[in-house]
Length: 307
Image (cartoon, rainbow, N blue to C red; front, side):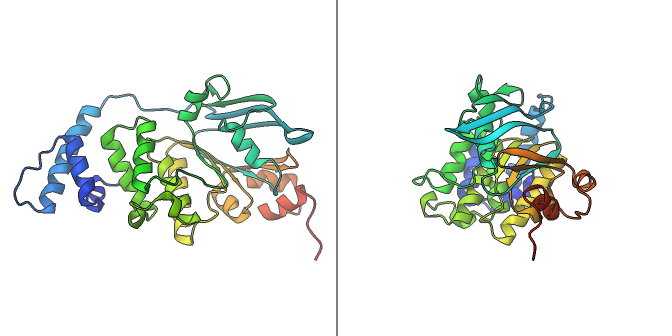
């Protein structure tokens, strides 16, 4: 989390009042400077964190995500064929492939949106079919086509997510402020979600999944698509930070430059099947002549087109 004084300094007046209420800081002055209020809140937060010391820190299972022999059919069409995949804490795995390769289907099964034909999926040890609520509580998901509650304002949505995931109020207020600032959402806080552009909706959903406490288990389907360069930079920087702090992240994308710069290893799919796995160095060794992820991808999914 960012420096608490910095976060408090970025808060709007109503946010400061809500944080004061949560911390039990009285605001009974007739006249008081904002600096005085901010200082009182910082001191109250220090006392609050002292009482929180010693509480168990959340840890992720190893692997945090596990897909075993996943098979999904839609009628006579095989969308995913016998997929095995693991994501461990402290890594970003790229699920890459052409359109129709089965990437989005895999993430929808992983998050419990659709049921597999066969196979097993566990999220931090919870089976998505047998213990769906516990599994879903532990995963953050961004779909390829972002959708949300159109009649909620952005701040209402973020507060709603914090309550759904039982984030303590003080933590929620600080984390909402942190990610509103990080994703440049201040001017949209009171906008209805149904009025947002695709990029601002994407940023709102991203802020929502980070309201919870880390480490995270994330399944992100084309998370960069729709973001402007500043938003994309912020997200990539954040994902690297989270990876280094022990989060487990699965990203589905066909933007190969992003995948190569961001991911630690790759699972390449084509027509529902895995056609290549490993780090970029391992994939180069197994595909002589290829120097980039783009060339490896093309070689494994139909060959490099002739010019």
